[in-house]
Image 1: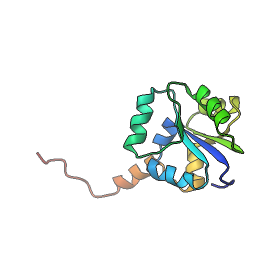
Image 2: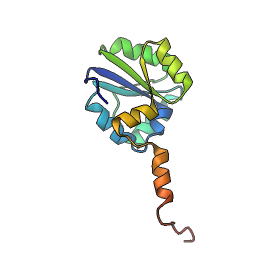
Image 3: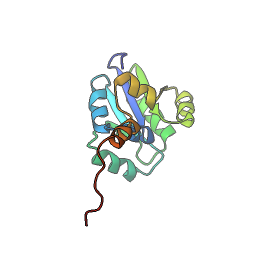
Image 4: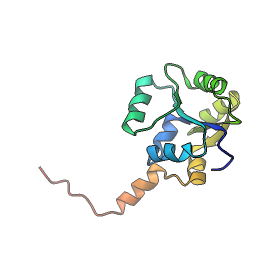
Length: 136
């Protein structure tokens, strides 16, 4: 991806889950983003558990707020040239428009940044040798 590093990048949790290596995605995005985090309508513990499990260090998260309120608060708190929301649905796209964030579908973001979509990894694994499941 390009556009400089003066950017705040927010991932919708479900969009982040579509990526094969979310930890690597965050590490990569830190090279061209000033701030990066995850927003979701899910309870805080769901986001926290996911980010801890995947060793993701985020600069912000939605906390007890929903996505709309979170994106508005992040935009007020982090004064960067660009605010980009990576989502996975038409609702995410509409939300980005409503709160004046740039929207990028996760598939487009993955293609631009050379991130791997999890379904692509699943397809590759199917081509691998079968794993024995007859062990006690």
